[in-house]
Length: 119
Image 1 (cartoon, helix red, strand yellow):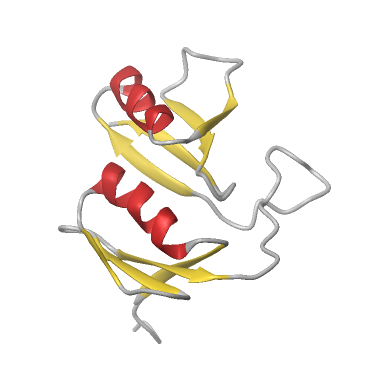
Image 2 (cartoon, helix red, strand yellow):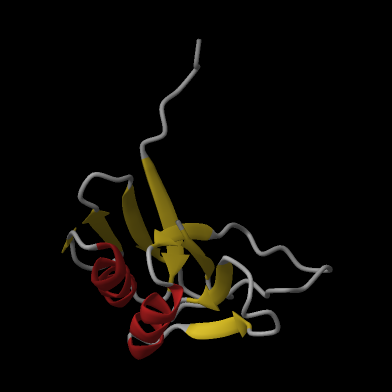
């Protein structure tokens, strides 16, 4: 029996509204909230929340001496099309060495790593 049920994944960032808008463009859904906390209700998926963190320091990836903190795996049907979309929204590629893999690594505008994974 589980002790708890996962509620919301919360990401620290310098601008909650902007980061929620970035993920809303990728995942769909609507952002709700102002100021230091914004919720993103994702259709058929887990909710994400974005919390203002003054002095936010983005994780470094890859950096064996530093923690990446966490990352999101986002499932897509077409890696190339999804890559074009996330780059247009402001994502930065973190790993371009092997284009034959079924996944690619990026950083969101606040520096959190995420992967696009072919389904």
